[in-house]
Length: 181
Image 1 (tube, rainbow, N blue to C red):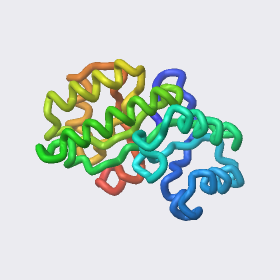
Image 2: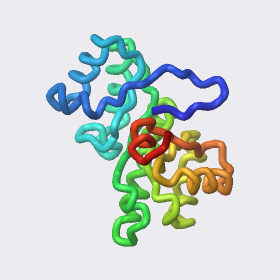
Image 3: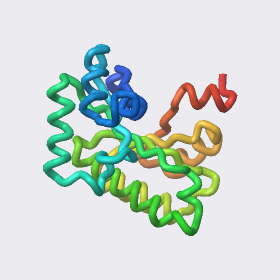
């Protein structure tokens, strides 16, 4: 999933998450399988074990990029799909925001690639919004915000936020599942 802007590379990027599971649990095996299929761009799920921002030292981050490059691929972006409700739940919001800001830092370290995340637009607090936008802007990372079931609210929110680092992420399958045609 990528953010499409003027001049964007419109090639598709394969999400590695389901391939990692099917390929025995390692990103290396998933990249090998994807490379065999001719995939040239990948989107990495940073909620998976071994790929979480807190688990990747600066050297591990460089090694990750080198692994992708050795497979003649490029990193299109990162996915951080934790439950949207965590961004609105007072008992979980701090942990969710910490995970998102850590993923933003990781995205910056990996070449300022976009970060896809799902947010509860209609329940999102201003403090959460501010923390995410400020972190993304400070690191030069674009956020691809997914809210396929709240498209009208997402568009209104994007207009209100009016920051170039925040855009809509649209998963066609999710949009179809939500009834969009």
